[in-house]
Amino acid sequence: MSHTPDTLYEASLKSLETENYVDRLFFRPVGFIIAKWLSHTAITPNMVTIFSIFVGAVVGPLFYFNDIRCTLPGMLCFIMANLLDCVDGQLARITHIKSKIGRILDGLAGDIWFLLIYIFLSLRLNNEYNTWLFFIPAVVSAVSHLVQANVTDYYKTLHLFFISREKGSEFQNYDEVRTEYIQTKPGIGKVLFSLYLVYISLQEALTPRLQCLLKHLRVKYGNDIPDNIRLDFRLKSSKLMKKYIDLMTFNARAIILFIAVLTGIVWLYFVFEIIILNLVLCISVYQHEKICTLILIKDEANGFRN
Image (cartoon, rainbow, N blue to C red; front, side, top):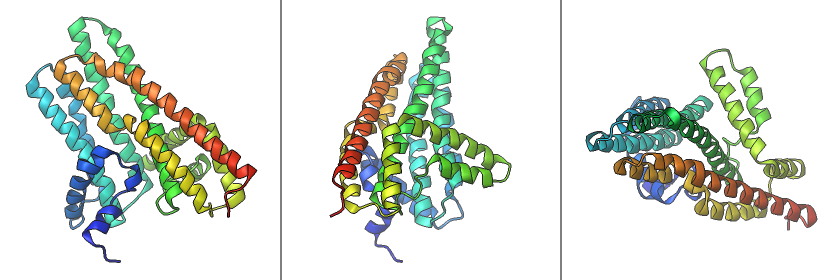
């Protein structure tokens, strides 16, 4: 099937509905240009992901130094790493080279960047204040980040599932992933699948009302969820993403992180992640669970089908 430039660009995205403002304005258009060029080469999406890990891995060490000559290159590498993180997904969708391992690697990339950032920021604070106590908020921040990123990814992938079966093909439950894990041969792939199982189990544990809704829809409609249920969910989910969930994505974090390292008040980032973003997380989960409960009650009472 041939594509016009506009339709090819849209095909390179998961969905315009799940992209935040900065991604739509900069990262996705630039990422598309790079992905389109790479699609004519032998470079695969997984190669781009691995390269992005190395680019993002230097950010933490650069932010260790309270020197603008290190801070600015660190910021540039962080932006480039996120750009490459966009490119790998867009390249995968353009070339139709997709894999579960690639999706897991893509998620691990950001975790590795931030883990190194937490380590080197805490080392920097240790040197500045001559105390190891800053490793405590660093660990709390790292755990908070994992949960926040996990839930954000889950809600965005879920939103795609309610757009269409094709868009939401990556949305799976624990049992489906566990079946794939059992069928996977021993090796690095199986290790990555085991991490993904933990990832999925946390997502489901944090969203009990959503799990009730999904079970209800599977039993009542199978794979044929009515369009009006899909639309109702998408409208409510979109509002929640714009108001709260997008605050837990890379762009909001990067802004506060850049302010922290540029001003030299690096503990500010830990405060932002532990207090502000965890509050946003709690509100997001509460509001999302409320949406799921309302849709479930409405369908059980009256049914959505016309």
